[in-house]
Image (tube, rainbow over all chains, first blue to last red):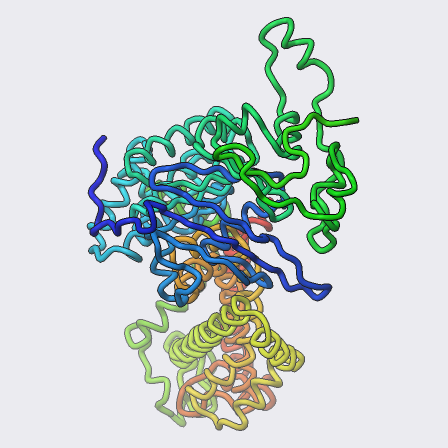
Length: 347
Length: 293
């Protein structure tokens, strides 16, 4: 399979080859009972062809970060600060029409629910065709061909026939492939995948991940992968950002993070993943109850003073409860916001 | 939602005749309703070919003539052939029924989609106006409308369509509220579609099935309303033959002496309403998955 030619001249990434540069992003929700920040001061860079994983438990602001980048934050939320640069171009400064021109074109997003992400009354082909025609000046038949070609690219068998099918005639995995085909149809520089495999069963998950990685290499797309599944992270990403309560708590290359998690929250996440016992020694370690992180994510409307993770943290002391730790480079290329990075838990 | 498309596709895979056969066997009453409607449509379309007499020409010798071989539904007090008038009357009834239903639904769709998709104060305003319109009985509203507009075919259609708007708008709005929250709407935004395009191309088609059901049921009701308006002298004026006016002209005076003046137009109205209701019920079963056993 050869890479398909880009429909237009590829805009060269500016600003040191960063496809996406998010700086101090802040998204606030204005509710009747007060305002709170779903994303507070998140920064990260995504290079061309790189995969960055955004990890955290439900409600930690992963999806809101993605929607903020796409400028699709639902009411009553609003991006109130920071910058988002797509290949050097500031997205938050664009007017809505210009932003629409970029969505699905230079920056695409795929969602968690493949079962409902396609319109049930239109054929799969016509929906991809529509997305193609939104951004590329193609005739109907050319867009049709492109849709079929994209379906072939995501390895849907008999793409021409499948293009005429309605979404309910496709399995969940097929639908997610179709969504990927739609998202990549204009060769975006950045693809945001929000839990792309969570709703699929395990065997299909692996196929979809392989497919996405393959296409990413073929097309040179930068990918922001949002997931809570550390297994997926280990297999796909080069770098990882761990989020907690709307904040970035740790960032590192994937090997560093797994070898030496600094933030107690990251440690907790890893400890809560079931391990397969291979040797007898492993077995004695893996046996018994799975570890959990005590407590729940605090409601964003009433975050504690100091470190937001302190109430659940085994290492927390008075300083943690009083002052939010600075986000620092603890080891080369390994950042964390913690007063007691990497220490063993006391108690 | 999926099941509408599902059915459409499954049916499309089979041949036309086996599909029709299946539907007739599955919904015999609906098929009967459809047959009645087809007969009415054909009579309206081919009126000049299936009638012998001019529905408007009077003949004093035939005044109140009872049914005979030549005039098999008899003649009215002006000696006009009742069969001809009923056949031509189908044109009026269908024009009013289809015209007012289509007009009412078209406006209702726009209003309902705007109201449901935009929400906020637009929705609030539209809903309160709907409440007011719906608080008045259909016939009373149509009566007021046609009295103020004056009797004509066009005004009758307008008068009957207006009370229909809030019903159509409500159906579309309720579905829009549900559909706009579905993931594919967000996905459509993420590929860069404009809100207008999403509303028209992605939300609207997913809300239309219940409207089809409503429209079919309303067709009968519109025909009945036209008959009622004409009965009260406010509907379609002379010289158009209208079933409702045929009844009103003769009911009081001739129901004892020449009952065929009353029976045949009454039968035509009943059959037309009966037909649309049967068809509407069957369509609801076919299109609405929640009603399906």
